[in-house]
Amino acid sequence: MDRRGVPPHDQSTVFQILLWFLFIVAFFSLAARLGTKYAMTRRLNWDDSIMLAAQSVYLAQCVSMSLGASQGLGEPMGSLPANAVEGFLRAEYVSVVFQLITLALIKWSISASIQQLSPSVAHRRLDKILRVVVGLWLLTAVLTSVFQCALPTPWDYLNNPHCINRRAWWTYVAVGNIGTEFSIIALYFLIIGNLRMSLAKKFLVIMVFSTRLLVIGIALTQLAVFLYAFPVYDLTLDLWLPSILDQATLSASIVTASIPYLRPFMESLESGIARVENLSGSEENLSHARASPSTYYMSDISSSACSPPATTHS
Picture (cartoon, helix red, strand yellow):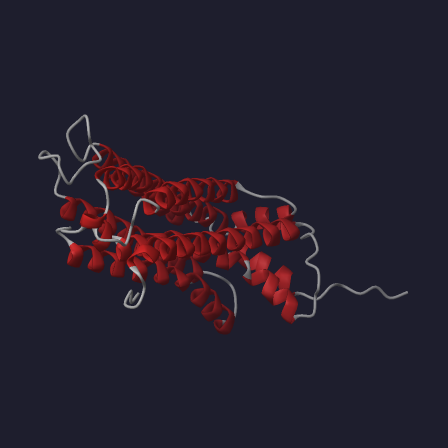
């Protein structure tokens, strides 16, 4: 984003507007997902609960980052008092932990939803491995972030002489995030390859799940921008754009995790169905899907959502 022409004292305001706009987009995307899913099945699952937890942690991240931005994010550090720079460092220190937890919860939610798509033992084994990898990535990233500098000021990487290499640390975080996203997409494609549906519908499903590539694109951009800005000579000025890309990554992660659940509702609109009825016999369909290794729950939902309501003849 080009900041030319924006007065320095307005940089923080612009950031906060973008921060809360991205949060609201994610919030309404999740609300649409939960509403559509509940309207179809009259229940919510573990993956939905995890996504609600992710949205809550995301809110905490936004609050902490907003407080930090109010200290002068986007303005030259030399124009700010020492306590403002200290306040920004503290807020960033807390927000990074919330950011990592949010990303991990979203990945775990997707992983939980994968179990509902495929009864295959091989797919579930790969899914469990993915969960463990995400857990290890979260644990190592958070512990390293919390203890990035020596006590009693672990947040002050500007003045504390005993700190980790932040360039190497953030590269590890970003590469882990991108790598697990690629794994999620690959697992989705592996499952979709076994779905019983027409090629046109299969292509559409692939396109829907491929929206996760947007998260990878933003994360790659964020990493490139951060590495370009490193080492940080002017903390509050140089971290303005990387901080915006952090928020874009979080928002896109929630939005793209919600898009697949909007598709059945969109199909029902195209079929002229104004209201999605409760899927009668969904439990029976799910049981049948689990009994057959090549028939998935997702195909049952898609076909049920697209089928016109039965008519009775007197």
